[in-house]
Image (cartoon, rainbow, N blue to C red):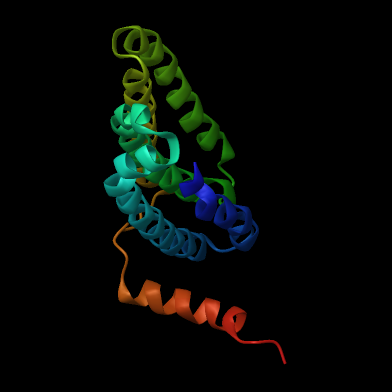
Length: 179
């Protein structure tokens, strides 16, 4: 869950920044934020995905290397879950919070039976598959709800040069030394 640090911090600010804004501004801001958070989380996730077995061995001992598959499933789940959390802010800011509850309910309604079926059969890996499946369904549901509910296409999730420039510009004042 360390990978969610960026998303949790950003979502806390994003809602207040987008509330009461014009829909096109909300969608643009949430889209850019989703791309930046998604890229940041995915980059950290790729490192953790690749280094996971080694980190498990070093931090916890050789007996925990068997958990590498579970770790990798959870890394992918966290990346998708971070995107769901950010994308859901469009619904919150545009006065459709019930849809966010619906996405969460669908995920929970899917997760519980999957856990009941997969954990007894596959153990912790089954739990990871259940979580990843439920989060994947929530991700697809959020994307599908953009045109159906918000009457707008879902934002592109591919980071662009303009996104990087905007991020750099927004961070520049914070990186300058205090006078």
